[in-house]
Amino acid sequence: MEIFKNMPLFVEVARASSFRRAAAVLDMPNSTVSRRIAELERDVGLRLFNRSTRRVELTEGGRLYFEHCNRIIQEAQLAHQQLANMQAKPSGLIRASVPVDFSVLYLGPLLADFTMQYPDIRFELDLSPAQANLTTDPVDVAIRMGLPRDQNLIARQVADMAVGLFASPGYLKKWGVPKNPQDLLRHECLRMTESPWTLSHAKGHKSHSLAVSGKFVANNVGMLRQFALNDMGIMLTAESWGLADVAEHRLVRVLPEWSSAKVPVYALTTTRLLPAKVRVFVDYLVVRLARPANIMQ
Image (cartoon, rainbow, N blue to C red; front, side, top):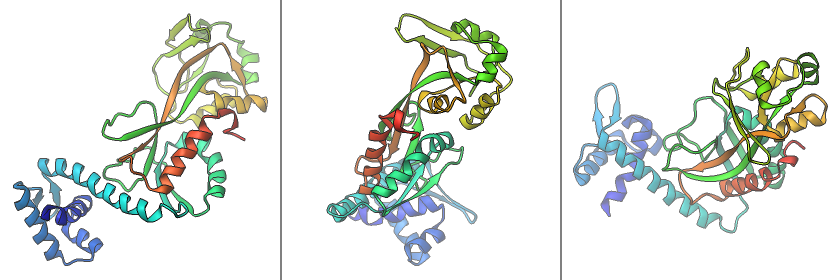
């Protein structure tokens, strides 16, 4: 059992990539941290860090050991926290990594209601384009679009977004209303990527893969929306957001019987053993995002 004594120190040094910085966080002498990491390396029979005067970095074995140790430490901490907070009201800081578009279009309108229900929960939102690494970055939960790539993470689906075509009345008046998917090949299509658009009929017996084109490709839905509102083309976007503009007569649904594949949205964590604050937040998203018509209200 001695091996568990030094495991938290190992995780802190690995996160900091420095014995000195880890010692400061742990409020321990640097020499003590170094000695106990050396003890751990003797116990496991493997060198865990490559040390130099400039930097400390994990060895190949150290990286593998860190992945397991980090999860063990997190789950042990969460187990204690859950026991302590079992009867308490959820509170504290949630550090969430969220795509910019999702946070603006969906999460933003929901957070006001959520924080009214749970006034003691605070948020630190990471909206940076570079996706956070849940294993090494200080993130409690990440919201991701599409199937998760990392099979080691715990994924809970919180939404399944239907996707449709939308354009402004001004654009359609000038360029005409598409009558079938093939007509899109003659239109300005506002795209997230250069990939073809695949559309399926509502009755499920027809499907088209279309190499659409247009002047604008952008990895930001908000920008594409502005293009669409300014009569610059047809966009493919989540119905729950596009329909909000339809209700205000800013956009019109195009080819309403045709849509793209639904986009699943997942909440990702490193463990199933979640603190109360994260658990109630994920549960809330599951309930509210299952009612897309209410998202923008």
